[in-house]
Length: 460
Ligand code: HEM
Image (cartoon, rainbow, N blue to C red; front, side, top):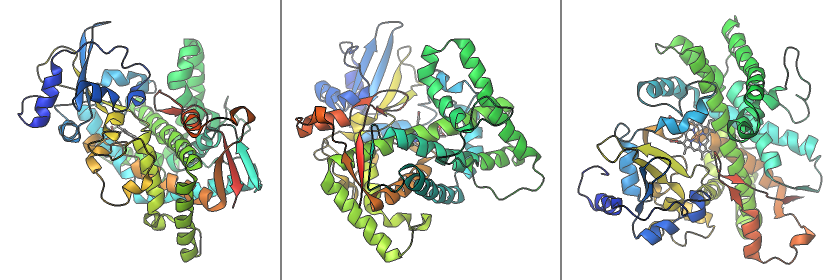
């Protein structure tokens, strides 16, 4: 459609292809800052950005579901610009940062690992991690405050990927000692691996990066070795085991670098998006107590009816939890620009991006798009205008992993605690809008990151 077809969406895209005034300042601050605004200004559901420096290039931003579907369906015509993903290849080539035959091979090996058995493991382990946190960190106190919700959502997501991704259970209280032969704990190795990708890399000299990378790699090598030499294979459903089995047994072989690259990407993709989304989700629930109450009522009535802790098989009963997550992902999509490029003859350097916030705030598809209304996801909703996980063959492979983890966290937390914004005297006089802006502030990064979400949890 972007190439030559003559549908109305094609005309809209080609129409704005006529060079616009360069929007260099308009892009500042990340796509989520502008939401749908630049599309309003352009008068179309697509606009182009023309860059003159450091090299001339044209960038199409799309917020039209039909055009986006065309782009995500025709993978070969709109491949990923893999050079933009080079930062993600420091441990080796991998599924996110590849294209063509390599990507097909990685996806074929990875797909069986993201199984229903793995999702079940995610659920069961998340329940254990939450109970461990309530008992040993929050000590079942009637009230518990955090300065930033990410301080607990990030460890939760790390622990879940540690066990359901890598088969290593980490608890809140142990794993503080550094095992023999290592220079950092497994928990720190997991955590710094992702921090180093964009943040620390800018601060630390290369030699420091190389040393800590060696320390982290030692865990990876050890895990690969121990699985490969294990005589009796246990039934293991973590992603890493599933991936290793497929890589060892299938026709598709992987080099050590490819193995490390993919393991690293599971770790990175598998916890940061989840931790940030959980954090924003709790912020919204604290800001909108009526929505929280409605969610609590559903969770407690399902739990009462079941008469036990819910399992993965009960997940579909939690329709309002899913709606709350969807609404959070609509309003704060963790990945705000999904990059593609055009392979047909066009000006050199032409790029295409799915502008997820533009799509998610497009008033043609979402009524009152700036309001937090989870119930819009209960009935019929415009599926093609909701793309937090992308779409088509390159859609997120870990979506169900996230949903199992998110709903298990939500069920455990909301059934026990009421969430409120932490009282801080310096903000006592602020209006609701000021409070909302403060609590929902974000930083664009590898994924949209909450700045500071101070919360208080009160025992129900
Ligand atoms: C809120 C949670 C999540 C969101 C919003 C999300 C979003 C996305 C998006 C937008 C993409 C496409 C990226 C692109 O084309 O550049 C993607 C790809 C991917 N995601 Fe997720 N993700 C989430 C959770 C997860 C989890 C939990 C895992 C693994 C445990 C995971 C693993 C992956 C992988 C391996 C890919 C690459 C797929 C491919 O290219 O074939 N994601 N994700």
